[in-house]
Every structure is written in structure tokens, then in C-alpha cells.
Length: 361
Image 1 (spheres, rainbow, N blue to C red):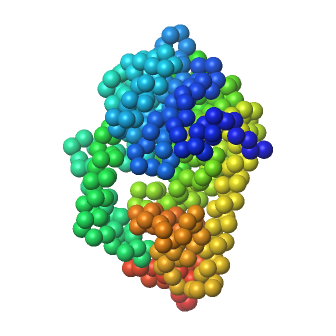
Image 2 (spheres, rainbow, N blue to C red):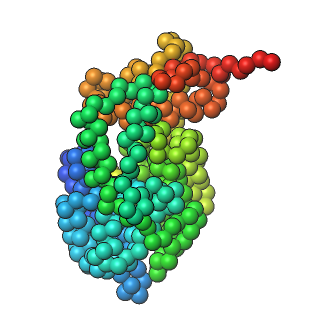
Image 3 (cartoon, rainbow, N blue to C red):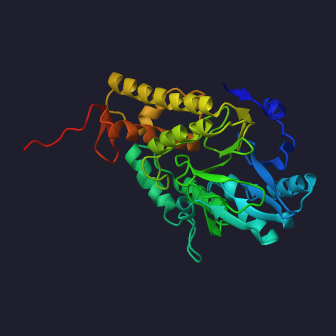
């Protein structure tokens, strides 16, 4: 049964204020770090005290801003550590609110930084122009989906955003594969590969303490963005649904006393919440099929505009509409893989129910 355990975090969320630093378990702390200009408001960085006065490890690091750095260092000070005491940074995934400060933490502490290989592969090599082909690849992808092209001002803004978000990312020191147990004195933390939100997303479980740190994979209130785009990896929604089922099965292995997500607030009921999220995606799939039956042949962009969202389509900013279309693309891909729909054409493609016609002999 789903139950909110981060009661103070939930109160702060409802009141649109930052939650406090909290002692979640003996030797385990939650430190909120602000995210600039985001409805998510903060990422929850978790600090794990290491045995034998060895220092502290952190799960995720926060966005690369001065405000985030101040919150992270201040939070560590509040629990009795300085930035120099950080021995390891375990990053759930490459997105800037999780990975952005990892390099700065390493520079100031000598900590090793860990990431899954699938996300590490997206980091530009030394000397390369960060994500130099990403904007053009995005344009080509959006053209197939019928998304209106960016004008020159929007392209420049998107390029600047990418550079600002990712330019500070440096290669990890440790690559964590599924099932790996990083060397953290006093902890038996197991890495669980959960692709979908990113190709290399990781969750972490400590059975002895009864906790699962879910990153963005399972959140208590919202569903993470699962979108098809040039750097999403193949079939992100299929991967995500498989990962949800896998993370839910942890409750068959040990008693999951509490789930520690990267946003919002802590909760109990991992399998229930994973099931609710999976049901949401299955309902979206059926909604798309129904809309295609009613009006065949839309582009992904046109179909996205006809779907139900948390607010009217007219009130959704352009950049969020493009992200929503990526989510639609991921769902359409899964339906097409199952033979329930097919695409005709490519620039843009248009969608119809039923399997694609095959050439007869």
C-alpha cells in the first residue's frame, strides 16, 4: 500500500518551500539542493556516512550553480561533514540536476565519481565540442514527428542551454554495471540498472537497511519523462516498463521499508507505486489508439495536441510541447512494435491503426 513517509517533505512541497535536511536512517541523510527555474524545485541528494571515520558518499550532486553548491555544502556541514569529506559521488543518471556538480565535488574533495556506462557514453571526449551534433539531430527527429522547426533565435538558445547544462560534465572514474556493489565501508549498496528515463539510469538498494534510492525512476506523485529522442536510446518506454516491473520485484527479495526518490518526498509501497505508473502508461497507449481510430493520419505533434495533459494545450509553452511530443513518440514506437499501429511517410510520418502493409510476392 502506498504511504507518504516524508511527511515534512510533503508539507513543504504543498507550501512551495524547500524542505529541511533530514536524518532518514542512522548514517543516512537527505539534503535538498535547488534546481533553477524548474517546477521540481529541488533534487534530494542523499549523504551516506561511511564506517570507520572514512567520510561520506553522496547519491547525486545537484545542478551546477552557485545556489546549488551552497545548499549542498551547507547541508553537509549541517550533518557534520565538509566537502573535503566526500569520498564518492554515485550518480543515478546524466541529467544536469543529478550530475551537474559531480565534477566540482571531485575537484574539491578527490572523490571518485560513478555512472552507468550507457550514460557515460554520452559525455563528450576531451577536446570535443559538447553535444555538437545534438541540435541538428533533434531537428531531424522533430521533423519526422511534424514538430514546427526552431527559428534561429530558438536554435541559439537551445545550443546555449545544452552547453550550459553539459559543458561541466567530465568522465566518471568508476563505471557501475547492473548488480555492482561499490566499495562503501559500512554499506551493502547494490546498483540496479533501470533504463528508460535515461539509457543508463541507476537505482540503489540496501537490503539490510530496507531502503531503495530510486533517482527519477519511481517518484511519489508524478511520472518521469520517458521520451523518444536522438539520445534516449532505443525503445525507451519498453525499457522503462521492464525496469518498473523489475524494481517492483525488490519487495519480493526484502522488506522495503522506505523509498528514497530524487524529487518530492519519501514514501512506502514501491510495488504499488510502480504499478500505478505502469498503468498510467498503458492508459496513454489506449488513449492514442482511440484517437487514431477517431481521426486517422495525424503526425505525432498533431496527436500530442489532441491528448489529455495536466493543463490545456494552449497553455503549454512551446519547449514543453516539444518534450510532450517526445513522450508521444515513445508510446507510438511501442504500439508500432506490437503491430497495433503503423507510420506512413517520414518527413513527417503520419500514424494509422493496424500493422504496416507488407509487399506481396
